[in-house]
Image (cartoon, rainbow, N blue to C red):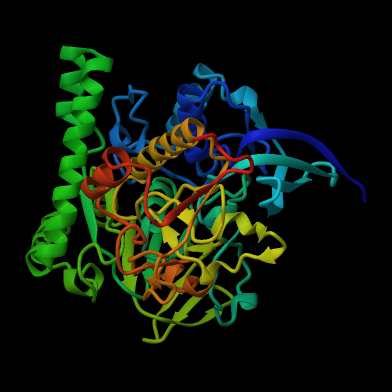
Length: 493
């Protein structure tokens, strides 16, 4: 199969979802002279919000902070479904001419850096035709998130082949699947499971959420009453930054409170759960995790919909382990059997760093576990490569916005000083390192050995604190002693 070299671009953005659209906006605003394109492996924009089609799919972060700082969220619902989020993303792309820059069915499979040419050579697979083409670019900006789009994670479930009904992973929800009037068992306890259960319970005969370990679950209003009042009083444009600051402060306060006072936070969450559940409900069995609040992501349920379905008797939570699937359901280690017509494995994601792209620098393969993250946006020893990974303890987009701002400031500095390449290099080659993200979610623990590392000090830490990142990425200089700039042509003195 032949490979054709098509063109050269200044910046190539990988992914046309939330992060990719945000990166394109900042580049067009701050560097309109640069040529850019977004390569999207699928046939539509929107990333996660176009991929996931399971019932009830929504954000568990408020859209005033999950949305962009530069575009107000105008919907009455602050916790919104995928359809509204997708419409918002596509409207943003259309308003800013970004949709015209997207090249669909274009999967980046490999990229090689040449220091002599100060450019990347990028191999692209066109997933609709099987053709391969090659692009060159000055910068690669990876905005594809950190999980595999082609497959979700399903653990080894004993006896799965015995079950006579459909077994479905939410990441690949069949369009024709009808759960109305049926008994559904949802295996899992994370954000996807707590979203699915109340949505399925609207029409199913009964829904059981089967969990091995409880998760912290908090009810939140689907609408932000104060935000809606401010929008009516001040108008969308003036109210948006105020609402955003309010919600950032609120989420940061909750996270810090949980980190500093875990036992008090645990007791408060338990009290809220008790108020939401039927009298005498075994709260400690089903809603009291063995870890501290925010050691893993805290699940938000709009208007307490999960608790409402439990009170109504249309759904239940069972905490147990699976012994085996049977022909008609799931047999638990306790001896109880859960009857089911449909089983949903809401068991998580498969992490894949940077879309699984094979990176080489001057002929040497980049081994991600041997690299260290610089400011949470670049990799040690890898020139002109940036990536967008958002927060795990807050709205994803809050960090994406800061990273994009910092990236465009870095390009401005390089233009002013005649630099065409830059790479982070640790001053201490033996700097102690630890896992890429300080987060205990199972999908990350399973993949730590395949991810980059982070160091023991700034700028080699992957910060999860918005206030610290505002200083690091927005206020502080882009210049750093451990960031090495270079130029192919010497700059005159």
